[in-house]
Image 1: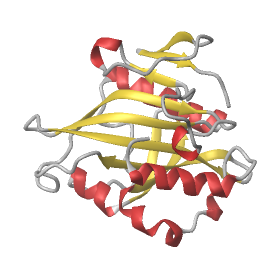
Image 2 (image 1 turned 30 degrees about the vertical axis):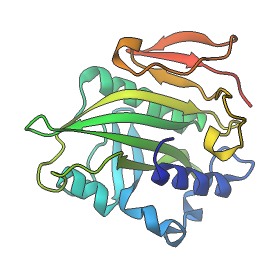
Image 3 (image 1 turned 135 degrees about the vertical axis):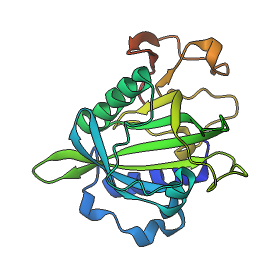
Length: 217
């Protein structure tokens, strides 16, 4: 995770769940994440094609120049990216994985902003992980934010973090060490070069993304 907002939200979520795959929705206390609330959201699973915003922070809504509550997060993507995001959200809901997604948003003027999105499972008693706690934050705030809405988005990269793993920023690592967090990415030509992966890694394809399964800590 690159941005302090996503790091702080993950750290809070991780402290709540303890040894469980995910914390309960009722355990979330907004006051404890007050500084990042403007960038956070909660999704409700309706079906595989509909993940509706139940709550959306003010900064996130301002970046899109509209209220996001009750909108489907799967709107505004290409067919390929929509299917990929649906697959990733299913991994969050069904397997209690966390997802960190590199996203680029575009306005009607083709202005672009790079963002980092975090998706975390929340448990509802009797329903399973039917809620998603998330954040989406611009890596650099564009000058046009709040004036020109983001109308379309593309996925640039994704990392899945499984329930028994810890992301690199939560654990001390010696200089030069390699993270074993599983990484999703588009073809290498579309991304910056990735760090070396463990020799045990194997690649497979999920939709149009290449999935590289890393070892678990």
